[in-house]
Image 1 (cartoon, rainbow, N blue to C red):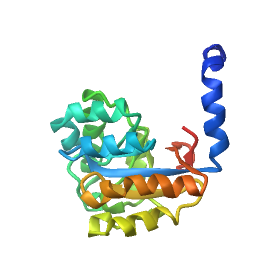
Image 2: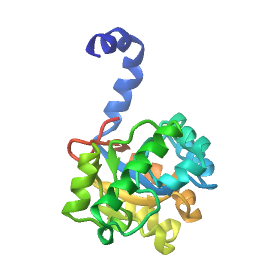
Image 3: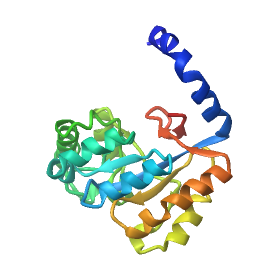
Length: 212
């Protein structure tokens, strides 16, 4: 891997150096519950504003919208696991939890989204059993540091203000569906840029946002 990187670094260095200089830190933008009929518009806005994000997809939605999973990857997003049917996992048996997670891994892979490394339990509802089952499937559990409240009809202004509270390495919870979230994307990009923060990937090792 290192040798390949060295061979290709010559062409990528100028842009990479400029990008690194502009980033004093990285934050994790995350969108739950996709892919849906709203995903294309969300991806278009993210791309137009130079943002990358982690998409926590439900397995049933990935299975129903495989083209949108491929579109997420093509747009430079990272695809992650958000269970199959979005239940409260702590109310399920260990076998049921495992099924929810394993079926989603398969659905995402079948749709062209690769093998997720990150897992977010629906509603943030977790315990030691949920974490253990996810880990057994090779997944790191990721919650959030800031909740945008977009699921609770937060306004675009409020969502932008939530992003403004992020600090280096932190993760924000947003969702695939809300129109206010899509409307906030351009100002999210502006807010991050003004603070020297860039949209990064979430490390499976640390659970924190890092350079892509």
